[in-house]
Length: 352
Image (cartoon, rainbow, N blue to C red; front, side, top):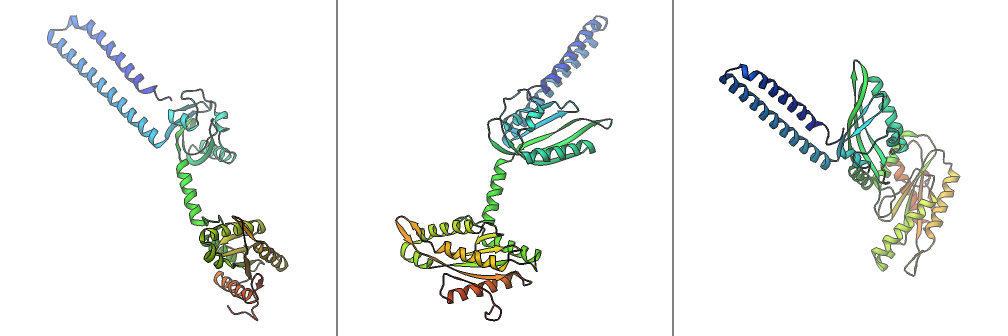
């Protein structure tokens, strides 16, 4: 199914039929009177005109389709069954960075799909053939030139007397849509400056953890940078931003096995530890955080000293809001204790 094959061919066949009719008429004409001859000639010319008009309209429609297909990056494909012979329009060749009209081997084409997409394609395609149905999916491919693309694939199985004879559909380049979607998702869930989870994602993860493991061990840590306001006031916000980026990287390195590390405010961070974290391990991690943040940040020849106060609330049957208030109360206790330290919430001594 190439872009140049089918339409002109059908018109040519019709033209041949018209020519054959003309020959038959030429044999009959001597036996007809002049009026019959004129009428038949007029009918023949009318049919020839109609054929030319239909062929022109068909060619115009195909040109519009081809142009629209190219703009939308949508191509048509078909695969005969059980021979597995592929036919593509030009757009599909372009999607896979293959020369237009070049021979196609389905096994080689499937190798262009990522491992996950190839597995999903096999499952969906086999099911559609077995059930004489259809499917659609988004698939990741690596083209012949090494370009990574996302395509949206639709497929329908055609049968003859309930026997599948071909599967066909469309393939569309949706790479730009995927990039935009991922960018939108990133903006919704991550802090642009530090790359950590933002407050929205943190709150969602906290709610999920409290609902999933209401009686399990775990903890919420709130971290506030000591001395950060002085950095902004004396060295400027640009230097302060660089400090935040460096602290974020240190937190990611120290907190490798936690549920989430987030920046939830200007110089405020949060760490959520999942279930099965014992209290001694929680305290040990808090100590590592204090130590990591207290190391000077080197920037443009300057050695900038910061600290961290950490408030910890152990996961129990309380709601996310209650857990956050407990951790916040412990944070203020850490600051009152001299800063650059951590405190675990104690219901007998702390208010929340």
